[in-house]
Image 1 (tube, rainbow, N blue to C red):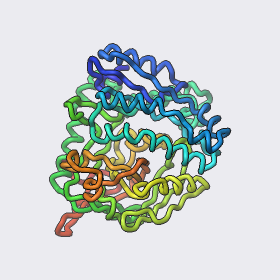
Image 2 (cartoon, rainbow, N blue to C red):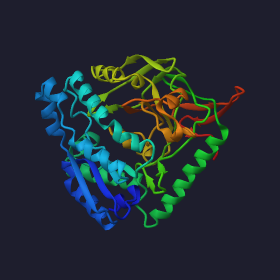
Image 3 (cartoon, rainbow, N blue to C red):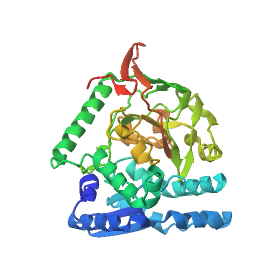
Image 4 (cartoon, rainbow, N blue to C red):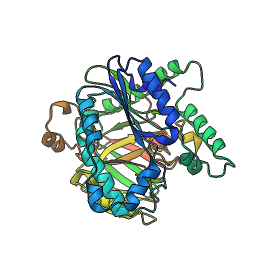
Length: 403
């Protein structure tokens, strides 16, 4: 498998923390642990995730019990992050598993988890540890993505084949292909950084949005390096280039082009009206709108944008032409925005700023970070220079800016 080595880049002597390891793919977690030990990990700590058990807890728990969730796991993770160890997060919660859970319960559970993990996330948004996010096929995910397959086994095989395609590992020379792909992403970031756009404009069906950018914004891709010079890949696949918006200067209407999955609950046909950087109205096709409304009320930054990402419609994931109901996959098939927390490394000099100074520079601070897809073959994106001139970036979902 080797993903633990390639993406996280575990160093000899590090502990390896696996968070939300899916019980439905325990064999894959064991392989990940084996690869970590081969890479020199001194210990692999596994925290498991069982969606059905979590559904039982949220169905039968009382508000008092929900608030009393033990903190020992978070304390272990925070200590490991402070000591500079390595992390792998699984994003395998299947869309629909919590569709019938009351929005108030689900929103409160998510808010508590985000609040508890806030000190842990601070190490990641500063690139102080090497980490990665991964997903692995499970039976519930296979049924969701390939509902017409006559057997779950066939759906699982198709999901694995999709992962091999979008991860660019189907060919023997895949390390060289990966290096070439990363160079292309770096070129794309370089040309965007050279332009230093004052704002971006997104126009498509249901979308007419202007996003101002901080003066010192920096375009990135998910191939990072820690502050101690350990290179790592934050997620696979990687097709996006992204930066942070000025969270106080976003204006207009934006409509999601795919299902938004939040904690296993699916929100369809989402439209947001944003004024002065703040979400003023939330519209959706079903009752799950209440969940998002509650989330954006969880803290002041939750109703502002923290990320803007550009992904062309000819990326390997986009070419598969299907929703995956998984943010890791869908986010690499589509331009997307994120409500909530901004990444500090997207602002030059932010490492030296206090939270108040980062916020004053336009960086958003929040306990949440929720990506939603806005890309399509009908989306146009252009950059606006300080003199008001415009430069086309994407036309009908494809790159028009040459790196």
